[in-house]
Structure formats: structure tokens, C-alpha cells
Image (tube, rainbow, N blue to C red; front, side):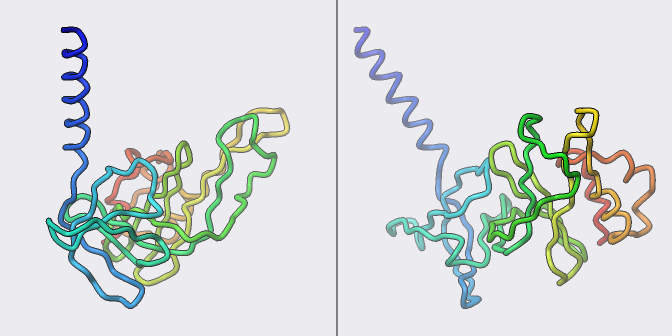
Length: 199
């Protein structure tokens, strides 16, 4: 009896896990700029993906695509990712691995960036485990990282390079941006007030 109950519990759990991951209406844009309507497997990505699964119809076989093959993909009303080659600083927030240099150490990488805000100015997010970086651009300009870096000070404490505040103030200045609002910003999604992005 116990074995039967255990088997039933595992079956129900497996079914629930499976049912939560489904193909939803979306699209992708290939490297030839063709937009293909499809169904994309919604994995509710915690980290920015480098690949995704899609189906051209409900009954078709799943196919794989990746960052090298598409310029953009999205699930309607859920999420959108664009492929860009950007300069990203991946400096650690762990004190043991922090450098004494307050300046970011950029490395050029091709990434799927999650689109958070679109308009005259745009805001993007990149997440990989404990690493979170935000990017922005104005209209068709190059996408740049909003700079934030923790570093060791000369007295062995944690310093913060919060240049992202100056970037927002200088580049996205408009009537909705107030000095005090920028000064009080923290480097996280909840802190970013999207009214800062001038539309």
C-alpha cells in the first residue's frame, strides 16, 4: 500500500512539473531578419538563456535554436530577448574575489538580453546565477552596461562604483528624472523606476 501511495505521489508530482512547462505562442527572428511565428517552450528562465525550444505548430516536433541562429525571440505577453554583442563586466560581489580596482573589467560577449523597457530609451537585463547586470541604449545607439561594481578599498572594506547613476542622469535626462530619485537608486530591478526611461 505504501509503495502504491509513493508511486501515486511521484506520478502526480511529475505530471504537475510537466504541465507547468508548456509551449506558448511566440516568435523568433532569424539572422535573415525573417519573423517566424511559433510556439516556444516557456522555461521561465531564471538565467538568461543561450538556447530555446520551439514548435511550428501544436502537433509538430520540437526544434532547437540558439543565440547564433536568431536575432530575437519572445513569448507574447511574457518575455522578450534580443541577441547583442556587448561589453560586460562580470566582477564578483564575493569579498574574497573582489579586486582593488574600482573600474569595471569589460569583456565582449554575445548575449541574449532580456528586454525590460522599450521606447525612445530601452532597458535590458542579464542574469547568470548571482550575477545581474543592466544595460541601456537610446533609440538606435549601441547598448551599454549600466556600471556597478563592488571593490576592496585600501582599508579592506567594500567600496561601490555606482557610475550607473551618473549614466542615467547624463544620458536619459528628461522632466521625469529628478536628482534625488537618481541618487537613491540601487542596482536592482525593484529599485529601477521605469519612469526614469524617457519615452
